[in-house]
Image 1 (tube, rainbow, N blue to C red):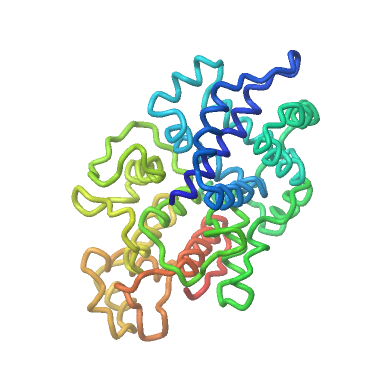
Image 2: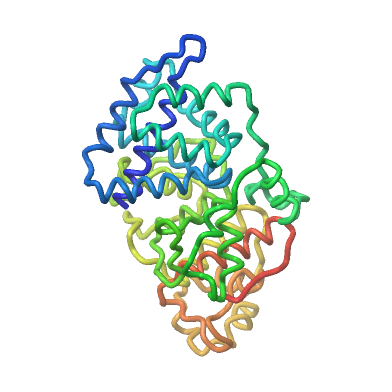
Length: 368
């Protein structure tokens, strides 16, 4: 988690460099940039290296740049504090401008995005200015839907891949995962990673059999659905602070009625169980108009094949049955559901893949 925050610090520094640059005057306001770089330079060499690797993952494709846009508020709070909006305004900047800068980076070649990171590390202002001027009048490519609509998209995965190729982007980090070559969920992991919905744990590593925290899976759901929240909602969870990387994610999920927590706790670092993951995915489908109605008899019928059906919590049975009916989830075998088992990253990727397919009119679901 700490290394992710350091990557966000450097990512913010990169965006502040770009947004503070004025081509006409060829000058850069470095006061905000220095704040980010000072924090970054306080880290040990090994931590800086790992943070840079994570930043390079952010910069690798249009999809991962979209993830960076979502993570920007967390980065701003880390670097500038709670009053980051006022500090940006003093410099003639805003969060929306920084997000626009992320969109502009989509038009850059991968080579130049990586060069930007190198030049920021070395403090090469002239080199940074040259890169900015090179793309000054370039329009960012349009993005595929990424599963954020309600299933009205008519584009297929193939056509989305063609759009990505046409934009001149290099293959996404999914292609570099060296630990899923022979994994049963390889196709689903790569497909969803290309959408920017899931990420690797380190450069080239997906860790498919690692467990998933409740905050991590909630982030996957929010990235997929991108729910629009029209009203501010106060979080009731005492274990979620505004300085946490997952604060905005949990706040969005709670406001959308996806995440309900455990009383006054959300347990963000707790390992999500298969039944918890299933309930969340069923709610996510319902939020996008893809719910499945099940009565008591149908719940019993859908759960009947599983010898461990009595282990499924009462609060989870209805949504588990609905998820089974929709094809979002299946048992770990024909006879076992293992509701209390910790979900793996591979299982999370597959269940997200299944929901993505349903929302986009595809029916290819996978046993997870």
